[in-house]
Length: 199
Image 1 (cartoon, rainbow, N blue to C red):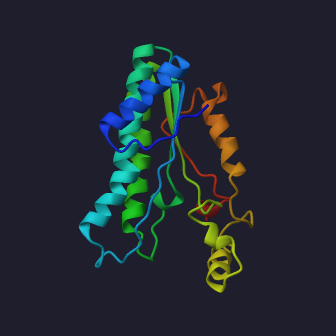
Image 2 (tube, rainbow, N blue to C red):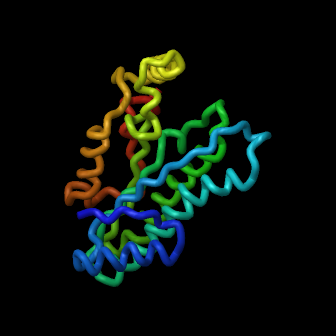
Image 3 (cartoon, rainbow, N blue to C red):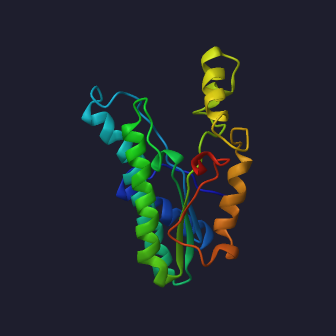
């Protein structure tokens, strides 16, 4: 039974870990799937909106990883941590994505830093950086509306595998990064993006 909650404060992230330990005896795997966006040209974006994106995508991620990592270190049995980044952490975007791109690049930095810092404890930290996947946030792109079709076609023209992502396309990489098969992989960001970032 997964425990899903927003780790938007130190007390909240610590409470999530405490509840997990009480329910399951420890924390073996942590998957952090934070992702909000505020789309606006950089010259028009208010600092508070920029900070809100970083709080949700970076600070909350750092808090969750920190709380779970403490528990994993104290337990002494290693663990697996998987952070959700985005292709936008590697690639810029011309349509007002400065906050989102910056936040996901920061998540990539957390992956590398935590991976280096916690390797000695047997804790692996890796990231997934997908491109467009079907989700509640992107459901509009899968409709027959003209704007949705144009956006979809634009993405499809740059994805070598010729389709947008489905939730099950993330399940495999998450299972791999959660399993012993990935025990010698840490500090890396994997791109389940149909080849979008390859070209």
